[in-house]
Image 1 (cartoon, rainbow, N blue to C red):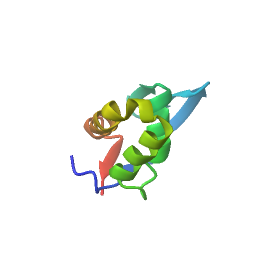
Image 2 (image 1 turned 45 degrees about the vertical axis):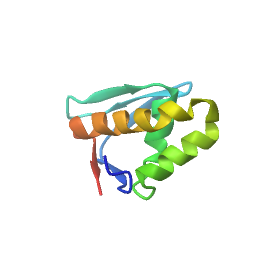
Image 3 (image 1 turned 90 degrees about the vertical axis):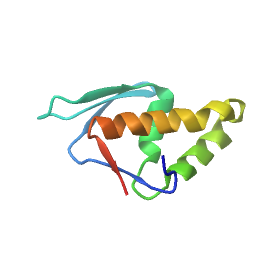
Length: 90
């Protein structure tokens, strides 16, 4: 995955937040996705401006004890978003 690209979330998705977790769903499509606390943070950081590499760097600063796993987790979630047509890369 090219981490210099940005993730652009498709419009029309709604969020339901419970504590630090969110469920993302589209009211007219049959698409929904549950995101744990880390996934929710990744979602919020994917603002269409920050490249994926910057999202990874921010998370490493927040969770240095998990730095070995963070890049893989971010890439895995972005891949899920792309596969479900919830986001595109720019």
